[in-house]
Image (cartoon, rainbow over all chains, first blue to last red):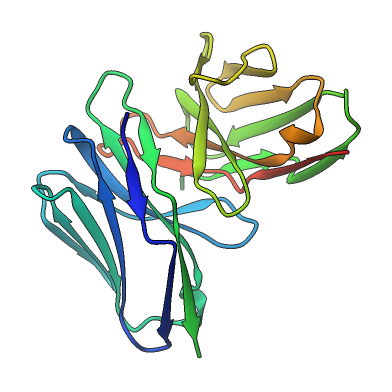
Length: 112
Length: 117
């Protein structure tokens, strides 16, 4: 089945850039997503990228996709303490079922 | 737009009782809703996909008689944990797919924390 992997933890200083990485195995992915989960809350969609794109920028967020290596990254510029959360990448396949598979989540800690 | 609510936000129940969790799309119609379970410090595990007016599709290993899903309208899906046991304690999150949007993105509810004593 599909597998989505992320590093578990990332710590950065306030004002620095954060880069969260994700690898996936499904070669038929259509959309890839980044979600943010704050403690005790549901998931908030941050951004998404279609699989035929290699980059998308949205304000402080930059998504890079290397489809050949099946590698997705999320860069947060000028990281703030409010960015501290768990970040999940997810991919949706192209099958009729269109199942979305979530990564293991990366906990981002922003140090003031 | 695309707000999803869940009720209750948390619930404590005795072992053997049943618990119903509601998931509502507040400002859009959701032809498809999803139910996830999240264990502490772990990712989301898809339990089932619920389509309005039809039976839910359960993921492998999820007991359909244990986790009853009803999607009676385009804005409401319910998950009932029947005869709950302590191992059912978890964070349950629903999401709804916005029909017709190009990305077919899922929007998530805030989650329901269930504790079975």
